[in-house]
Image 1 (tube, rainbow, N blue to C red):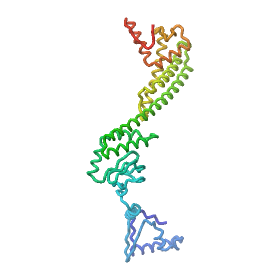
Image 2 (cartoon, rainbow, N blue to C red; image 1 turned 30 degrees about the vertical axis):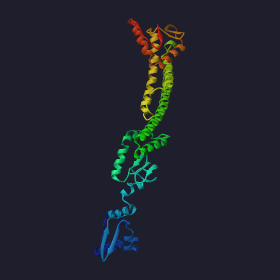
Image 3 (tube, rainbow, N blue to C red; image 1 turned 30 degrees about the horizontal axis):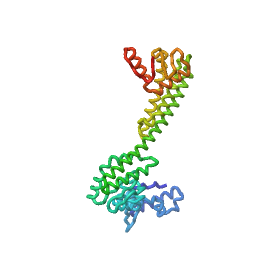
Image 4 (tube, one colour; image 1 turned 45 degrees about the horizontal axis):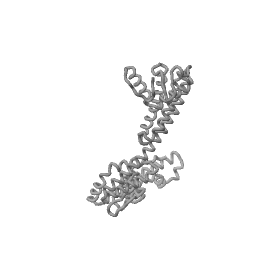
Length: 355
C-alpha cells in the first residue's frame, strides 16, 4: 500500500517520474500478481488525500502546499477581520452584540443620539461619544462617581434584586452625563446605601446560619466526650456546663444579631470565624466559671433570690452556671476582677453579685 502523503509534501509530476512509476508498477505486478493489475495510474493519483492539491499544465507540475490551502480556508470561513466584530461606534451598541470587552450586551438603560449609551454587559457600562473631545468631557463628568459606581457594580453582583440597583446606577450615570452632578451623587449614594443594607442583612443571616451549625457540632462533640470521659460528681461535670455554655452563647448571638456589626455576606470567612469564636468563648467561660466555684475562688453567686454555693450544686445549677458563662461574655473576667479588687482592699463591680 502506498504511504499517505503528509500535509506539507510537495509532489512534482514530470516525464521521468511518470515513467519510473509505470516501470515500478509493472515490476510489482509481475512479482506479486496482486489486485494492483487492474488499477491504473489515474486511480493511484485519485487515491491521494485531497489536501495535496496538484495542478499540471503544459507537461510541468506545480504543487500548492498545505499551509497555503489552510490560509485559503481561513480566509473563506472568516471573511471579516476581528476588528469588524468590535462595536467601536455608538450605532453598534445593540442588545445581543458584543461590547469592546467582548461581553454580550443584555440591556440598554439609556441612549442619547451621538452622545452616549448606558447599557448592561455583566455590569452597568457607558459607551461614550465617538468624538474624542466629547468623549474626554464625558469621562470627566462621571469621574466623581467612580468609587461609588465600582462599589455598587461589585456588591450588586449575584443579588436577586440586582436589577433595582443597576437601574439606580444607570440613572445616576445619565444625570452626570447630562450635567446634573449633584443629582447623580444623591442617586448613587442611595443605591450604595441600599446595596450595603442588603448585603449586611444577608451577612447577618449567614452569621446566624454558620454559628448555629457550629453550635450543633460543638454540642455533638461535648456529648461524645461526656460518653467516653464522664464525671462522677454532677457538681463537677464540665461537659454539662460547657454544653449549657454553647446554648447560652447561641442565645446571646440571637439576641444581639440586629445590633451587632457583622461582615457582609461577601466575607464568609470573617462571619464563620467570628461566630465560631464566640461559641468557643462561651464553652470556655462556662467551664472556668464552674471551676471557680469548685475551687472556692468564687464561693457564692447570687442571682436574684437564688444563692448558688459551691457546696450544694445540683445539675440544674450546673446548667445555669454554664448558661451564664456562655451568655455573658464579660461575666468571668468581671468576677475575677472583682475578686482581685476585694483581695486588695478595693471595691469592684461586676455583672453578678459576688460575696
